[in-house]
Image (cartoon, rainbow, N blue to C red; front, top):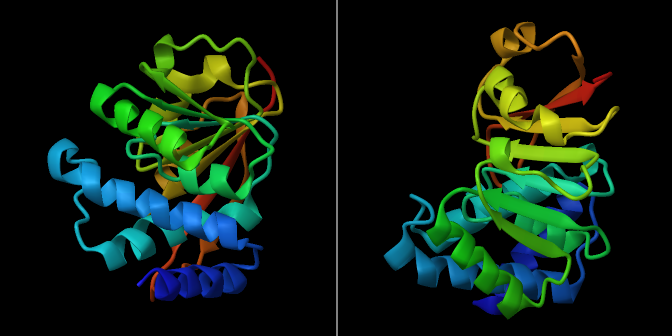
Length: 211
């Protein structure tokens, strides 16, 4: 099974247009192993089938990689670590903060960090509106967190000037974009295709202009 899953990941990565090493593929498989194990007690995700953990979580997270940029990342409302863990695995030289207020989920993420040797990950158990980072990130990413106005209202204090919020959306967010605060502007809106799936999702890139 491991070889078949590694082949699936390499094929999906090639279709997405990114490079995935054998070590990174093994780490992603190990991450799914941990999700399966911890999901029984911690209810990390409603997805139970292993094949769907790959398609709906891992590959979807990887699919945003060609469309995002940044040097210091925060994944707010990360839950089981999505998309932060897959992205951190593919960007081992960039620091990622995985932030969630649910202690059970952050305990799981600490085990993911330990078991997979992900030294570029920091886990924070707090609400984003209460978090005061030592160094503000230039990139924030969210997946199924909240509407844009709510997200910005909670996270605006952590984002640097000219920093970008990347929001993964399953449905059209036209009304959400219209409600953006005046110091935030939409700089990109893309339909992201996910290998092995016949529907896409939207990735919105929102830039902070001034404080």
